[in-house]
Length: 107
Length: 277
Image (tube, rainbow over all chains, first blue to last red; front, side, top):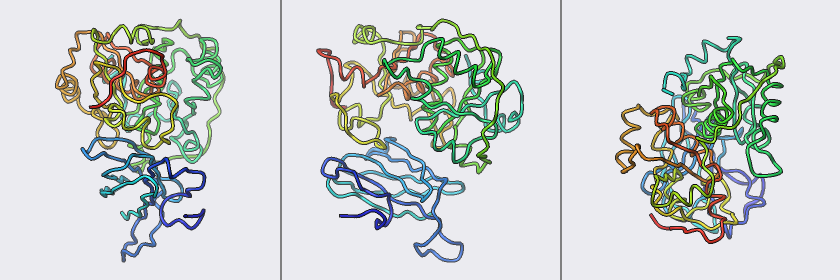
């Protein structure tokens, strides 16, 4: 069980019934100019879009002040599209009920 | 009703930030984003707190709408520019709302908050102080608003366009995937509705596609636009987006937004429901 503050990537899962929800979440970080280590600055002006297995738009959220985002989806294959000034990144994921899919995306 | 009279670009807004005739309003379901930063001189309306009655499920009354606009410093001859996050869903809902109450000059910022943000244009945190006005609204124009009985009667006779995502249309999801999937009502769609997601009409940056592309989306899906059309979604904001596309950008007159949408229809006792793609 993840606890508040210890989650790498997405926001705290406290209060979310993971037995009923299929959570896809994560954090968007901007890589430094000289390396690609996963310690970049949080992207606070990003938009994360969730596409279904057919590539159809399902939802979109702006990143929060920690660069985080969250979706409540259904089990299956999804694609995340991250847009921010000067950047666009796609990431394919598989979501399941019971355990959150938590990703860190670098742009 | 045309792209020229209903839509403005980010450049146009940037050039009119201090135009006294222009009032810029950010509209969303979450106004904390406004507090973090907004377009200079923009005020904000909260989709629920400002625009929903609260006691009964309905638009606010004409008198309350007049009071809201008056205290916000909006005059009958103001050019109101609406924008928001969520790909302008709630801004287009507000656009439709302003038209229901007969405001003459209301326009939408193409691409909304997202396009502005992706362009790395400036946001400010200062909240403008506007001088109150005495706004006078018109009686509601229900020619652009559909109610439940009309929707039930439209099954198999009028165009019904479900603008939600395919997953919501089929019954897999009960709400857009950024919201918890908990809902009292059943899942599915109105029989004979065609699923033409709102997102088909928008580019990835949130701006609208060209008129030719928009026409093809509806005609390609087999919608005869010479017939009356009712658009719906879950709570009426995404269908306002598609209503905007049809009524304002393409100039199709006989289009209504069913703002009761699936949260109403999916809770009605005894009405027909379809599931699957």
